Image 1 (cartoon, one colour):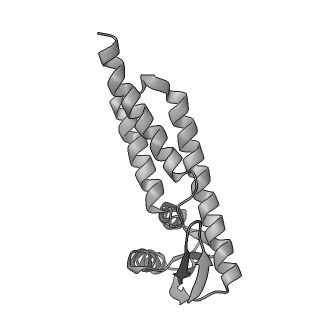
Image 2 (cartoon, helix red, strand yellow):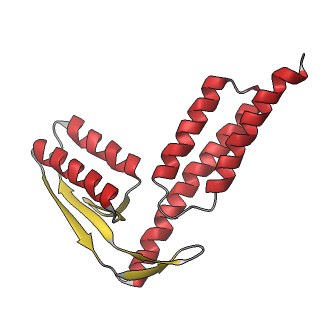
Length: 165
């Protein structure tokens, strides 16, 4: 196992990899696989090769996607890998940066909505932050800030009707 230095502690990380090839046509299965991989927050290592930190959940998800690829007439294999410390740190850093971009976008959208946010929009923000958190394997720096931005909107929205009475 490789020791990777994350923000606050050292952890041992193994990676689960999915290597796959899927026919270009029809495009629907290829697009569906791409969307599933994106929702998982994979790191693209190479053409047709993605990685996630290995645990039971990520391994199972990649195995399901591999089965989807095979059903679509493609080829897929799931691997567990040990990498050099440098490689693991690079992958973790790239994944953390990708989540930071998602959090930054959510924070900006929340700021733009201001205090006039309705309950439906607040629910969408909460769902979005939960989805990002599920694929935030390395606790991106903006994670807490995004959560606080949504909480502040919730507080402002709840307090606004009381102050207009």
